Image (tube, rainbow, N blue to C red; front, side, top):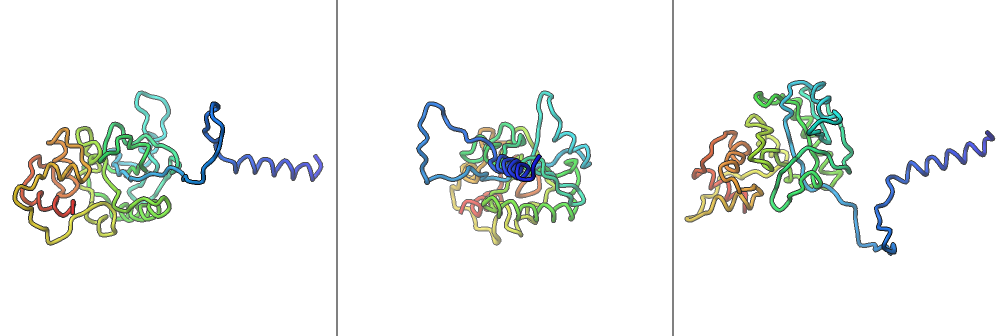
Length: 241
């Protein structure tokens, strides 16, 4: 093939690759574009533990095709701090399942899922947490997600899930600005304070009150108690201010 023809073919190939996915437009409508638009983007980051203690098996599960309930996540963080990306940030990963956070009900479509290799019964190694913090810095800055919009799987699905477990160091993440956290000294709850309503304002689905309280305790008190006490009320006052 002549050199000029090769160059033309290369240009056409590069143009096709750069064009990306075909636009989604109705054949019934005349395309009359408005400049007042922007790309859809995630608004939430959901943290999980894999319930599997090693990286290799976790990768197999998150990349497995077929089956009754295939799962995936955008990122996987190993115990030694290795980070793998499995799904493009602009694509929908299957990590949240039936879940809710505030008024958000299709969490998969509006979130980034990060799986953390952990069996669910062990502390998270420092190297892993530091890698996660670096990843959160990267993702929130690139995608414009609020640093406080970081939650656990148990927060968005309190009836079904318990990850990333009571061992996860939410307070450490909060020192870097990730996730919502309370301030000290805690303000006292006023008389008649409605703690369950405050849980709803934070974002929890309280249709099962006990499950919501347990999820709140996992996140903010590293425990699994199912009854709210005076300190919980004070924490909720701080969170909802």
